[in-house]
Image (tube, rainbow, N blue to C red; front, side, top):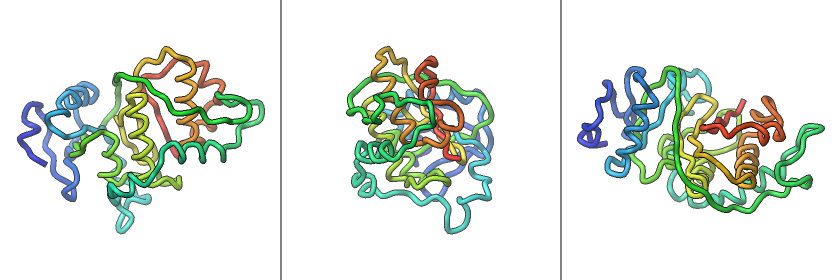
Length: 231
């Protein structure tokens, strides 16, 4: 991590953690504005910014001692096929009574296609993390983050995030102890939006089922961020 690559933006005091990423030692002011400025510098800095809830690093949950985040190797990520993973998880879903699938009654998973752009938002207290990666999705593998109440590995999550980057231009924005948030560009095509909802649902079904039905999600306006939680 080259300190020179961070000079263009004033940052709070911080340190390099385990040689894998830089993290601020205090919460940052105007996190959304700072994040956006650092995103704009990413092509030259090679440091992807993530806003992190302070309790992520204070958790007494699975991220302590030997269970602290373990980075995923690039070979592990390359071995995961995002489409196969999402299709398998989609096929295993059981919808609540009275709810319908966004892509047909038979739960047929939509084929992967494409879309673009990027737009952020944020409130609350966050630490700032800068991760040296080639692309934003690889930050999860570099940190080794995983949802504690899921069977998903950092490599599997990274593969899906890469796919979402390529097709929807969703990028990682916030990490919490049991959740992640990604920026979501405007979506005009209803079929693309239905596909996006299906994929979110396949990856984090418990959270979505606990909050709203798929049908309600499809009727709601497109949120500028995608919030995925495993509880």
